[in-house]
Amino acid sequence: MEQAEAIAGLGALAQPTRLQLYRLLLPYGAAGLSAGNIAERLGVAPSSLSFHLTNLVEAGLLSQKRAGRQLIYAAQPATVESLRDYLAGLAD
Image 1 (cartoon, helix red, strand yellow):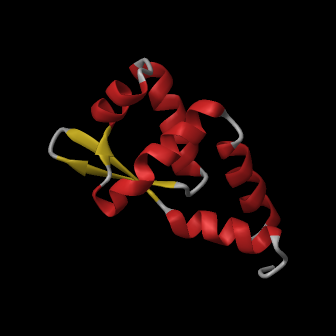
Image 2: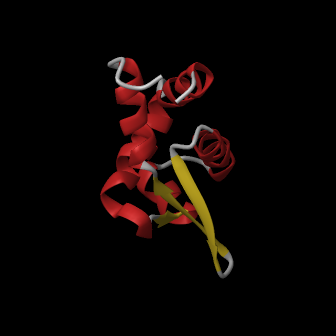
């Protein structure tokens, strides 16, 4: 992991809604949840949610896939593991 990637990941998680979003999705694994389901569970307006989801996807913390008319988001725990390793000096 490069320093810029670490900063992007840490910055993305350093916001309460995005941290809640990541933690919400983690137990669902690769199956993830739809954007509508996430909005309902977190009580976040769709326009605000879209902003936060985009930020997490761009930081590599979430994946996004289309299922029919829905967008499904899933946590990418390998990115957080890489962040942990980077912070611990285990990866350059």
